[in-house]
Length: 421
Image (cartoon, rainbow, N blue to C red; front, top):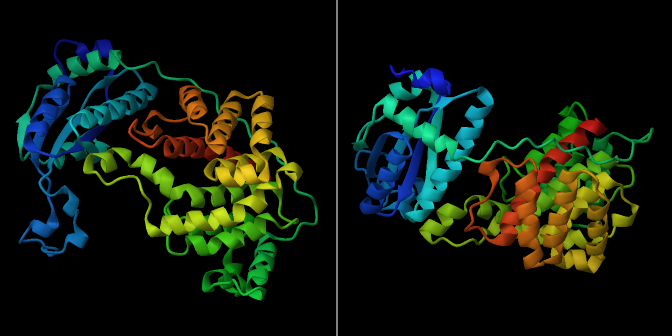
């Protein structure tokens, strides 16, 4: 603790320390970035070559680039720790977010990117701190003073009201359990010869372990997008999801959830490209999709027009999911005639979050680049999107827009599903 009373004037030390790790293409850029981090009050700033197991004779994966990251050969890591004072717990989170965004910008200026890092309580992090390659250290008092000056430059913490749940048609009495409906959809695929072992699984006795509809929906989500990423089986699930959404005896909150899941699956490659934009840009990897993501996108594109034509008969909650689907597939949106209805829904929204969300969906569905820039800025300025969730400025505009729309709809969909439970 500083002896001059810095802590008592500016707050208490943070409860958790954040260790940053930035990848740079060469040592000289690493040294320049390290100096900037010192100016920002980072402590224990270190610089050393990126460790790659496939180049280490002592590592069991030596000579196995598939178990390493060969694209970082010749690159360097700068690591540092932020230890600062905060007035309260809420500001601790805010200062952490602001610093992560600022460090990412510093890394971009030096043709690098943030490459992970860690967070732990003070004792744990300092006990395991690896000081090899130490370039700069400064006293705790110096770090606190510099961090205080940096914190004063951060934007004010936004107080944004949580989104309101979109109105969903009430669940009518007599609807069958969702598993029964899933099996009807799977049976239809089986009858028309388009079933796969993945969809036929629902016709066995194994799915009966789901205790209720909510658990079944969670199982569907995990089967389609495990931990938010694509698998070889994602595309196989798409016709089944479309069949469930199109079934008349599925409650509106469940249709909204499943439409959101379909749109997630169809846009996953583009959204992940936006999230990973700094790394891809620094390494010159481009913003293309892998084969599984492309196959999933094509599968969703095949069912999107028919689903979007349901717009007139659906309630507001389901239309939120349809708007996401339209945003991801503008050609289907035009063919289904839903672009103008999305604009009308946006104009009718009294709640700020949903209005901004629908205007962003309309700009994406319209494939209007100029409108997208304005609606994107509006969305990230006044809605509950964390600063660290905002994509890098080097991300493709459409991918960034889809990523933000996904974050906005995620909170809506959670509330819709809770309301339908």
